[in-house]
Image 1 (cartoon, rainbow, N blue to C red):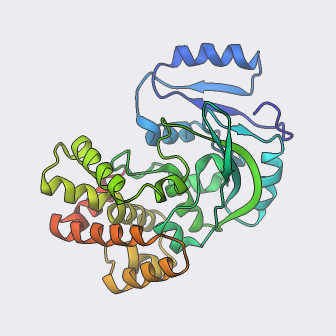
Image 2: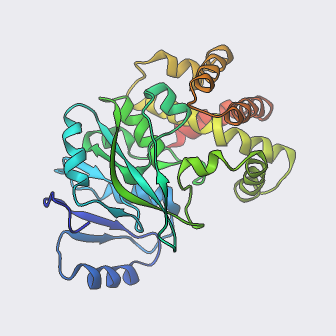
Length: 308
C-alpha cells in the first residue's frame, strides 16, 4: 500500500483482538510512516463488525474509502485507476488476480460484472478489498444491520447502499492480487459456486449449530432462511428506514412486503442470464419456504428495527 501513486491518504488498521501486538508489528513494518493508524480496544468482533468498527474511525473530512484485506497486494496505480469513477458512481470495483497461498500460483482473474441494484441484492458481485467508495454512503451504511456475523457481509451491504445513492460500477482493470487460502471467510465467489449442494448442506448444518444452538429441524429452517432471504430482507428494511427505496422492484422481491411472483420472476431472469447458477435458485426458494415455516419474515423485520 505504501507504494500507491496517490499519496494523500490515511490507513486505519482495525484490530479484531489484541491491539498491542498488531501495533508493534505495524510500527516495525511502516518505519515511521505517520499515515498508518491502529485502532482497537482488544475486543473480538468477527470480520463483519470489525469492518464496521474501522469505518466508524474514518475522519469526517475523508472524501473516499478503500477497504483492504491484510494479505492482499495492491497494484501501485489501484487508487489512481479507480478514483476518477467516483465522479459518476458511489462505489467502484476493479478485478483481481486469484493467487493461491502459500505457493503464489496465479489461478485466474476475477470476472465480476455489475448487474445493477436489484440483482446486486440477489447475488453480490462486489468484494470489499476491490472497491473504492464515496464517504457519503456511510451516512446510511453505519451502523451496519446486525444479524448473524457469518450471514451478514460488509461488502454486500455497502454495495446495496451505494446502489441507493449514485450507483455502482465494475471495471476490467486488475487492481490487486486476491489471496485464496483455507482461512478465507468467504473467498472468491467462484469457489463457492463450484462447491456443490453437499457443501451447502454442510454449511447450513454448521451455521445452525453455531448461531441457532442446535441442528434441530427448526434451527435448520431458521438458518436456511437467514442465509438467503432473511439477510436480504434485513438489508432492504434497514435501507428503507434510513433512506427510502426508490426502486419498487427491490421492495417487491426482497422487503418485508415481498411477493412470491416478483421474486420468482427475478430468480428465473437471473438464472437465464447466468447471474446465478441453478443451484442458487433452488437454495433461495428453499430459504423462502423455510422462512414461511419458521416465522422468518417477522424475525427479519425485528432484526432490522433493532439495528442500532
